[in-house]
Amino acid sequence: MATSSSYVLFLKSPRSPPSLTTPLLHNQSWFQSRMIRRTKPISTVLSVIKGQTNVRKEDIVIIGAGIAGLATALSLHRLGLGSLVLEQADSLRTGGTSLTLFKNGWRVLDAIGVGNDLRRQFLEIQGMVVKSEDGKEMRSFKFKDEDESQEVRAVERRILLETLANQLPQDAVQFSSKLANIERSENGEILLELVNGTRLCAKVVIGCDGIRSPIAKWMGFSEPRYVGHCAFRGLGFYPEGQPYEPKVNYIYGRGLRAGYVPVSPTKVYWFICFNRPSPGPKISDPSVLKRQAKELVRNWPSELLSIIDLSPDDTIIRTPLVDRWLWPAISPSASDGKVVLVGDAWHPMTPNLGQGACCALEDAVVLARKLANAIKSEPASVESALRSYGSERWPRIFPLTIRANIVGSALQWENPVVCSVRNNVIIPKIVRLGPLLEHTNFECEPL
Image 1 (cartoon, rainbow, N blue to C red):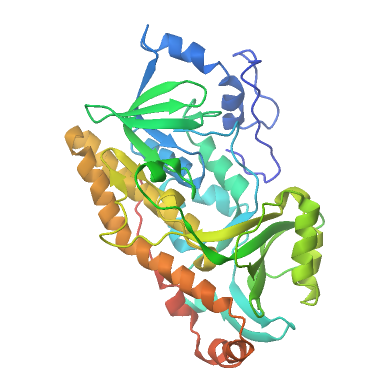
Image 2 (image 1 turned 90 degrees about the vertical axis):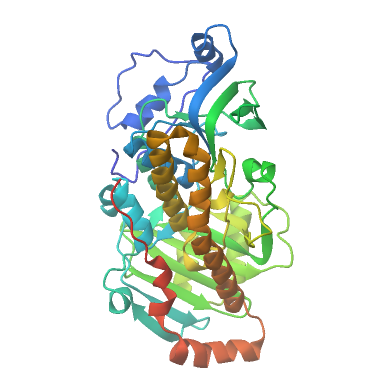
């Protein structure tokens, strides 16, 4: 298990496999060594499996090695079930910034045995401060005053993924494995074909392949809907130590809002959310992204601009915000036969409640428990278990998706009169934090 935020995960090209007896390098994690050693070409592996056939048999295949996919794989592993995780990239997608986990997310991480490893690396956030664009404080809260059991930390996505992956068995994650086609066989098993020609036959397929999920599309889900605003995100780096108190800092303007929160003693996460009628062209040049972000908030509190300036280029991103409302009797179910969706693949939501990753983690443990019980008791009941998972999770996911959308829309108001009422009446005198955090209540026993 790695506990340092500085280690780097890497994968040698499968075209030039190293010796299978390569020793571990100094400070190299177990998962890093597995990735280096697991470089035998897939065609070689397939020739060993099933003799003359070119179809590889698997019990459970998970598509996508993001938070949802790795958490699901680890939950199943804790319950004694193996799975194969297929990831289209050639390594873990460890780029990007941070995500906020509330107590429901931490309860899941504790249940799957990685909570304390992560706590040691990230600051516990004590509360939040809300300011206007001129820097005037409108309201402040302390999380423990509202809910003594609340736990809030911003976590680097890279470290979360590596921590989950390090707990999985050898060869649990197969990289460079992009899905090209999915079909259902006559006996109900799922046939998967990868871009590289590999063919697999799975008894259960779990789609954890993100907001643009091919699995969701195959199941009949609509594309996620753009909600009318985009977000810049980044991670400021302070090698000598960052100067901020462990609080979430929000700044609200007209059709524009921003925020920042300390992640660790040396890193601070920031975001800027702005209205835009369409997502616009994708921009990959980090210098352009940084310039555009600063231009939006050029007259806002100076600490925000300072954090942006201190953000390494590879941490700055711009993304359109999207969601999908799972209308009853209209939207497809979470499962179709022995194919099921988890996390953003099923219910993409806007980040306004900080619940996207938390809900994906919840999905993972709920699905794993139901699937494990079905397989161990009566394998024929697997499809019923997947339907039960969808029925249990939908009443939680659907309202949260709508609520996150409404909160985001309200915070993106542009009308000056409405913004004045928000800043001078609603936030200072009416808003209560306690009810806004009730959705973080989630019971989760250890697996």
